Image (cartoon, rainbow, N blue to C red):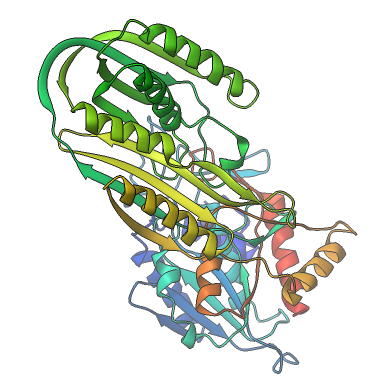
Length: 476
Ligand SMILES: [Zn+2]
């Protein structure tokens, strides 16, 4: 039995999508589904070599001379489930439920990010009663992992200069720009020698962490930087030899925890120095990350890295920049460049540090990456960059944005749509880099707790945003 309202085509299509497995990297089935819908409805369709799908629809009567508009959404979803869920993402349909006007999937992500956008676009392409310019439905794969789909789109197949990205999560606001970025891995071979001595275990815990794009401007503590700072202060008292050093789980998450074990030549003041650091750092983070705890305990050390290499590692981590670097006055405090020292890992044979850098302009990203690489060079470390993605630079002049603002106001009884740029990466940056004069806007219905099993779609907002989208197309 249908959970959603089958008389509304976008709801019906959304429900169909939730029956097709479509986690990132596993989009073949949903890609084929879109191709078959296009064929059944005699719409021209292209499926490319990575399974992106492009569907073309002619203008409605009277709109033949209007500029073509691209409607874009990504067809993959983040597969996350609760620990007690038996859901098999490779074959099971999502178990939909409606609660208090919200659509959810029991125990799993819902994939309204970005199934809502996909459903809207298919619905528009199939509805012969709408008024609109020539339309191109652009469905991309693997946005949530590598943005491989967007990188592979051949814009020569699409002759259009206007794009509506339907991957937003807030009905009352529209994104007007996004960050570019890349990852940098710093590494160096090391050797451990056997040891059997009493040493110390230093632990940093209790920090808030967060996303390295969205939360980097909140002045939260970075566990990797905190542990490096304490080791650096200790090393000024007496040489340190590291045994283990590890912090952070993901390159794009602000690290919440870090651990180090080490021996110190003259450790008479070790506890006293650490206590002093704890007092200072806790005071600095009193209002932004007050849960911080730092502990020092004695432990047995079984292997160590020599003093010179240990000092080099500690100094590099102490010096490498992290956190907010620049913000905009022009765009309401938008973070315009930042670094995140996400991962620190000292293994038996190497140490490896992972940083992600972001910038509202590609030049910021290049500059920050250059700075980190230059510092690595001074230390004799290896640095490699990967996973680069371009920025979507805010355009001061955007007719698409102006029309959107006007139509939103009409549809929402005089209320203005909010507009802001974000410090995360979006597919829009990639389209913009391929086609610099593309005029882009981004919209979407209210979706909450995306990428978690609590993800929910506000059904009233799902309806309103579709009405708005249709009205917007009528005005383009
Ligand atoms: Zn998305």
